Length: 392
Image 1: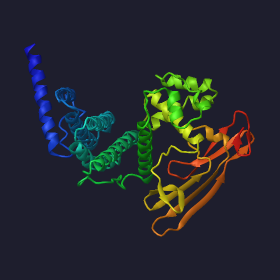
Image 2: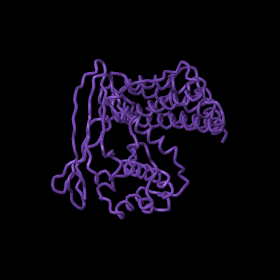
Image 3: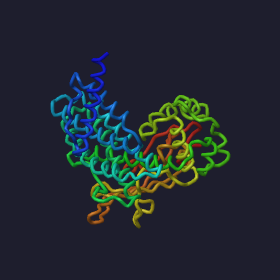
Image 4: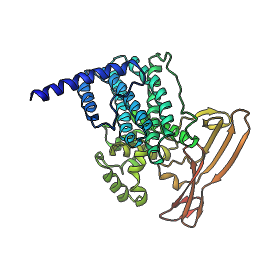
């Protein structure tokens, strides 16, 4: 019993020591690594240290420090040629960084100043992205998706920190924008950046919705017609299986209904009720002539519906029926898609294409603005036939 008490005291003292060390640098010394048989001691120490850290703001600062330690560990195990230990450590990094931001937001709601912790997140995530880019080049293909996801979480964390600091007029020397290193392939950079913007837009849309209300009331508040909203259930969805069943019973194609959970998780929505709200709000917006954006569009005379830029290229996209990969209602309206790709350095038009929804017997070719704000198309088998570019 005495030995166990001594072990607990030792672990607790160890946890205090690592916390102090982590606060001295942006990316601390990793200490024990995940490949060590004694790594569990560090996990216990951190848990005890967190347990005895009181207050949302203090916990937020601690989680920010722990996230940096996880990344230092990832860098170290990859350098040792043991990338197989990186994936679980990256998952802990993402969880701890998300916890830090969530607790800081909670503290802000209580009227506490989050300037210090948000400034720390804003500065360190820019360093984290550099480390992740370096690690990306050194891991095997099967480990790259985990690195990409960590990049997304880090980039998203930076965006949230900057937004919070701007609101407090406290940006200071925190970089307002960061980007992934050019060492990362362009395709990967664009995929990560697009996903970040998609998730941020969806989170913002969900933030303005009172999820305590019934789904029918939410539908009406978002501009849905009484006829449409009457079809929504009164009870909240507790499981994704319930959404799938509701979708099929409402006449939805089974191949779409079974994929709804995957679609929501792709956008960072992990609970069933929020998933249904996201999908239904998108459907309501599409059918009422407005749109749930998945990209931060900027206004421009050449691009009435806005544009996005990647490097020195500007992408404009205008879809007359405002198609969205989150909604089925656009299948029943014929639309025309116009897309332009412009070189921002000299203003030259790289490409300009116009496509109109069309039918091939019962199969519809639906044109829409894709993730990069470029032309994208989808094949859809209309349940009741296709006519003049729209399902009957």
